[in-house]
Length: 353
Image 1 (cartoon, rainbow, N blue to C red):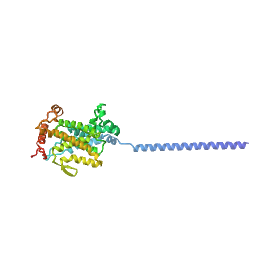
Image 2: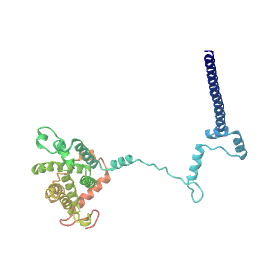
Image 3: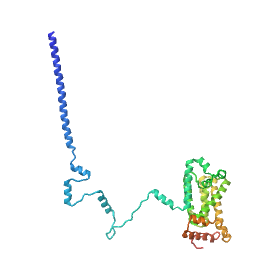
Image 4: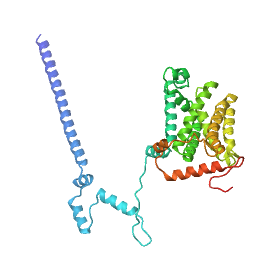
């Protein structure tokens, strides 16, 4: 028994010694590790210390030594304004005598401002017509094809009994959905409308458009045409072509007389549509345009200058044009050239017989 207890005591004492030794080893390892970490951290801090001169240079300042050197050299510290001034001086051009060339300040307009400026330069009535065409086209896109036909097309019953008085005007402005044909028609409207308004004046062009809308409403109802904007364009071209019928103009790759242009436009639309029905709007436009031309220029000449019932009234001239002597001289010369032109012979404006 004594030997058993003595052996147990020895084993327990040996376990305690081994445990204490293991704990001591762990403590030693921890102490050594902390000392090593502290030494590495101090070395890293020393290696990453930024000198004061570098901090000053980074902030834009300068150290005392660099300032002293610059003072001795007589230099000055550069700033952003001085750099910009020096670059501007380099960019300035010099004349042959050595002086600085005076340059005008160039104003770069943005794209939108340029388009607005061009839009304002269009003649007033043509500008209103083009704006109406664009508005009706956007409205047709928003409504859809079926609703656009029902709301914008020419309908005499709804116009007279439903008081939908916008229908004759929307029928004269709707060119269909946007396409290549729409772009070409809008260009023709701008080109021929501007030429007519420039030649005869805004008031007379207003009379022309009003007569065309009235006549084309009647003709379109007779032939079942819901829209007649293309007919208005053809009537403009016909009136222009009758003023100088034998003048040679370019059409596609051909050189043709001016009076052939309305028929060439009709032929191109027939070929594109591959149907003779596409010629009907152009035929109506030629007829209504010739009615205006006959009563405005031919009939008064047959009656000795009397019976010009399509002349714009004076209050309309004062309202739309004001008092512009240059425009009056141009219109009088054009009207005199048209009245003195002999039958079957063309005459250019300002030209001889």
